[in-house]
Image (cartoon, rainbow, N blue to C red; front, side):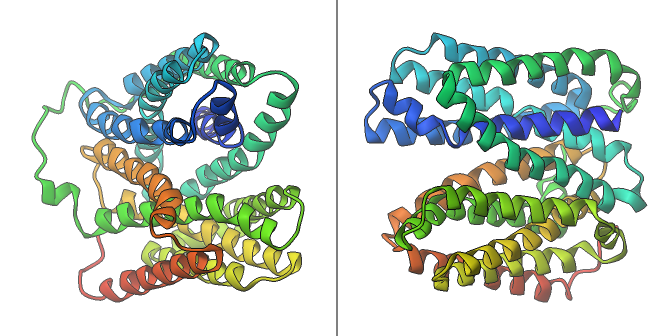
Length: 380
């Protein structure tokens, strides 16, 4: 059962990462202006935010099984809509639908996984799920970039659509008997906002935001940094792959046992701190060697942060509110991507100052997290 959930998580993020290298050029090929092109790229994350929140509420009300199946099947159908796109306006509509329904999958999948994982193994389980996310980040962009150049963008999305529909059918038959039996026995109640947004979940939400804020900055500024140093654009791809490979190694090697032995708030602070240091290193790098070292540091930080955030969220919630918590959690993920890639442009920061700004923000946040942990008692 867990293997199927991990596979669903992989393809959910694979769907996201395959869009990154092709969407802007695809929009331009349809005659979109620079503004519409940027809107088309960001529209997915915007509607995905709403999808995540809706999924969280429906998951707690209907159970993760129903929402997971709904998300997989509707995402598969929405991906097939790209075949009908002939102008930028239709592309915006399809992007909105795609992001909205795709937002149903991840909160339901992680809720399903969290409810089925033993408490003492939640750290290692989060690391394994993180490995599938990292693998999708490595394979997705390369897959779509190469295949789209030889065929077309809609063809790439058709392949992803086929996997989504197949997974929806498999999940319907294989996960039906593994549902947590709570839907009929647990009445729907209004959860006080302070219960959902407690100290632990608030730190998990903000960590998710800064994780993807940092990721958005990397996606936006790293290619520009590479170009400014006179290197070929292919170096950007290998640097991103380096970060992904290092992160996956942290997830799957025996190092993943640390997430069940050390308090997640400590490994979380370490991870976000290393990512901040990495941003500062990139700002000062003047050779490809230094860039590789910086991205390896970033990968280690990401590898520590992602499982820690998931463990903290599990520790800070009960099964009754976990769906809503994961809904907000991945909504903050989406918001982080949008702001990370756009805020630096609004502030008119250059390449070096943009990395320095982000590095300082991450280090300040890491310091804040570890210092404020001393006041409240640990949530079990």
